[in-house]
Image (cartoon, rainbow, N blue to C red; front, side, top):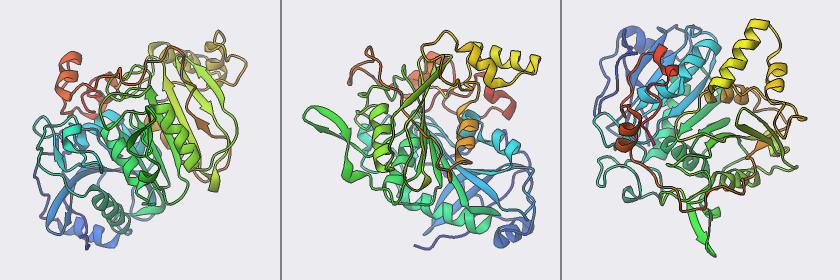
Length: 419
């Protein structure tokens, strides 16, 4: 399948724009066209920009974020950010703040758009392999349903060819349905990503029931090589339940998914759990080929994108005011926990920042992490009920379409509403 170069244009006011269904961004300016044709060699305007990909005459959309560090001479890393169901690329960037981290750290972000139409205008979902539309949270008979695996593979190829990025430092992050899509992509054997992060979404193959127990289908997940994985989950997530259950595409729990990835990555060693401020971070051992697997479990976490709690923010403020080392301050905050004797971790960092730090160590063979042991009081499989986007938006006072400017992302607005 031939895949055309990125066809698009840079909007001078991209932040307030949302991606609409069916939009094709054509009519290149000469400077943009030359920059894309050259890959490296020309600087580009900083900010979010609309892009489209043409595959055999079918247009696919997305958004890219170019940091101010992009000068066309130094190859930068790139992170692909996959939106949840009933969302869109701009809404996902508002939720994840990947562009905020990219501007600070100096890397490119590409947010692609799923092919299925969502519940609300301007929203979309991913056509995840082996998941019939009837089993999803989007309307039955939703328009779209294209080959997402080929789209992602070719999009990565084109970005590496047409932008000044380092082909060895290409990473991916997925939220909810976008993480399920990313899981399926890696399970299909594609090896473009050096590391992957998942928020409320980690899967290790489609769910199958064996002797009354749900587990990943081993034949449905065959990665080409060990890959570094970092995943986040909330114990009070009703959409993709931590303990399992919920929609037909979910069923097995987060702990089972992470344990399966430690097997796929050839990890060994015993778990070493650390906790602070209601967040559990557990170590597992080492994996093959330098891969690592990490997980964060939020005791009070729901399906929302995790954010530091008030207590964590207070600890951070105290650390800044005193000039003391953050690790020491967090250690004090965790002194009443059962794991106080173990090294504490900084729980003030949101997933995107934590993932970026994790990706920077994908070639190391140091200690890795896995999911925290399930609590005895954890909900039994089958008790979770997945809410659709409209219901969640109504209960939390938000919209499924997120178009807030950058400075509103961390205010608590624009972070709910997609599954």
